[in-house]
Image (cartoon, rainbow, N blue to C red; front, top):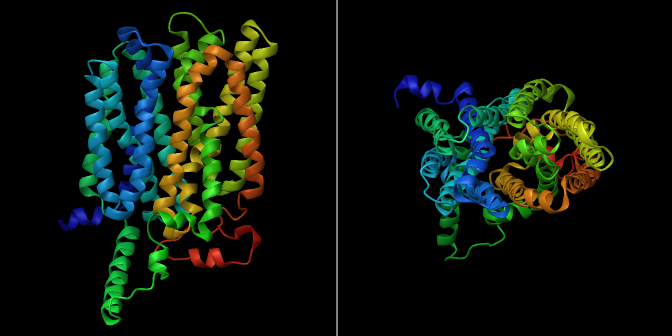
Length: 455
């Protein structure tokens, strides 16, 4: 590699750029269905359950991509996974744009989803491993900012080129192409390189010992115990995994993506009518989504992760319960506008807490040896919850009404808030995350402080 290219390969701006492109892939690919779902349903006569399948096809791919991506990143490195993300994004976006029927569209959206899922695993991981400890919170927030920008772009395009679902899908290949360019220049994560080097040394020593002892090998050695999927079940990883899954529940099952994917339906049912009025309202909601995310990043390192997560979960839960109540006791425009006010408050609370923090907090809470497996597993849980919610949301609303859905969101939010109160560590974000160069995770895990025990 030429010297000038080598000098930029580890630059923070390049690492953050790959994270931003990963966020754009995520946001646009999942958000564009808002504008494409209706035209596809009209063209192919898709029923409500079949529309749910169309929406969920990319989410199923993302679920598998995020889960498998963790193992791939741990085994082959972070950079090959970036290449996979770029290729599947380009192929899936363009292919789904030319799908001749619903089945083909779903298959190609599934392929696109593999790239979306892998981006949600590898892009935040590279930021957590390649930027300075002091700025991890700030730079880690750029992935979520890019998701919201991607969703906003998707909503604007859905309005500007209304009905042109093929073009909407094909345009999703652009961030994949840009990521391919970044992949050509960016360096491999030093954390992976160091871990790979240690594994080679360990394997070499074990081979020597095995040869010396006539093939005998101690199955309880640390290298055996701390490899593969089993690392997330180690004693020091159990509580972090529990907290991570709770955060995934908070991120998905309190309603945010249901609001975003089906925002036009929500506004229409809430009483906002007229030509393109629900679509314009959805765009305004996305602008608010981006603005609140930009504001939120200034508080990440000032107020602390725990305070923001806990406060955000309380506000989100209250908003869900109030919106559910409004659909029961209010009618007409009063119901619509009251619901929308608290919908906007919900979005602000989400972006100021779990929306901005999830992607890098799950990497902060895990021990170093389980991070590359544990974080994608937690990520896979949030995609699974996303998939379940997106498939059943329209069905529940269709047969049980919107108020029922919001009561469910509120109940989940209340339960999650209580569990987070007892399990979220007070030391979250106050100690440096570890890497092979600045390895402090052992001291953190061994600390006698109750606030940081086992996490």
